[in-house]
Length: 157
Picture 1 (cartoon, one colour):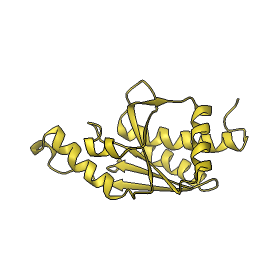
Picture 2 (cartoon, helix red, strand yellow):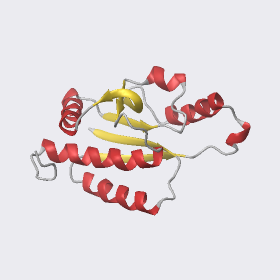
Picture 3 (tube, one colour):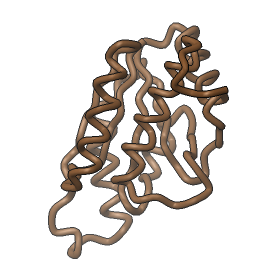
Picture 4 (tube, helix red, strand yellow):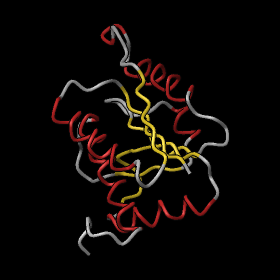
């Protein structure tokens, strides 16, 4: 199975880039992992929130195939603890799905089309985080899930 993470726009924050790179490299020992960064929208002041979500949604769905499982990282999604998330990943690996795509949305969430296409939603927390921070938290939790599945000491049970 391959896991793809779609991100909305680049980050300029050096500490996020460094942290993300560390976990992205670690993940390569466990699973096929790819990051896709869709470009941030330009001239957003001229667009309504709905227009922004629509344009972002089009960019997100461009990279999704019919056979892909699409999971949104959404504040209204199902919450897991780290062991529960590793169980979720294990079930996906056992399901025969070839590609699971997780998506970090923009500042206003997702378009209706993206919600309709989605196969599920996961919340990282009840707290709100910037979409820049979410990318780092998600990749760390994915790495943690892989180490839990292998009974490695990174996650101290």
